[in-house]
Length: 155
Image (cartoon, rainbow, N blue to C red; front, side, top):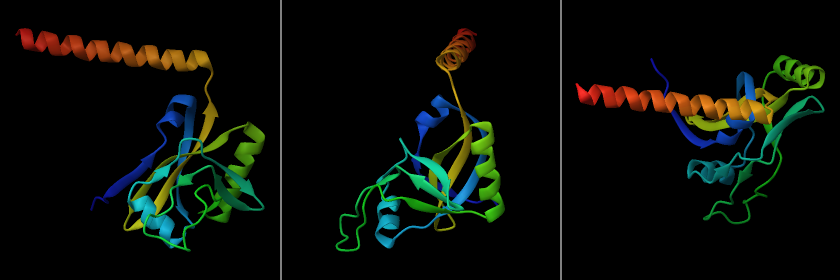
């Protein structure tokens, strides 16, 4: 049985700026008004990153706009949120970040079986020439598909 995912927010810039080594699905520790705001699509992952602090995985810079109908229960939009992962995974990611110089970047925020999940990526930074290579490859692929479409119409 296929599981349905509803993507609520994406970090498209991360795929441009980093080589993605590995991805992990994590849960988030959120307040009620934050969940309601996320369900309305009022979340931004653009400048967010994750770190291991004191044996806990925390995500920084994830902006969740205050819920419009919320009152005193609204929280700070840039509040540091705890990610829910197994201790072994957290230790392994902490070692990868400290020894190999990798970065933890959130890629997507989505709903899975009614719960908010975060797709966290273990990434390596790209240099400018890597980014240019990706852009050139994408343009070449686009040109190939265009020419194939033109030749198919000409038949």
